[in-house]
Amino acid sequence: LHSCWSLTGAGVQGLEQIPTLKELQLGWSRFTAVSHLSTCRVLTTLSLRYCSLLTTEGILGLGKISTLEDLHLGHTGVV
Picture (tube, rainbow, N blue to C red):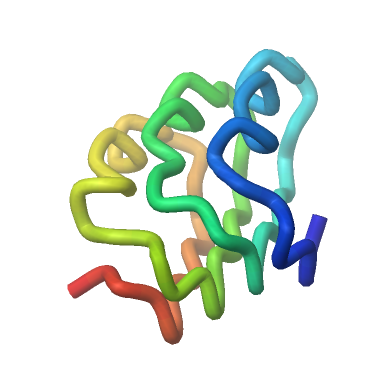
């Protein structure tokens, strides 16, 4: 789903229901939050590069993903 500028928050809802989701690249998209992904049990890599509308509040809960090894937040609104 990388480089889908028309992808919004509604477009990423439901991804957390994929039980085998290990890697997710959502870079260059227009959503403000991905907190719902905190229930992903096997996610190891999440790339959110260049999601300029994404905020610190929008990633709250991602720390609950014990399998997450790589989190890419470059060029986002996350501080």
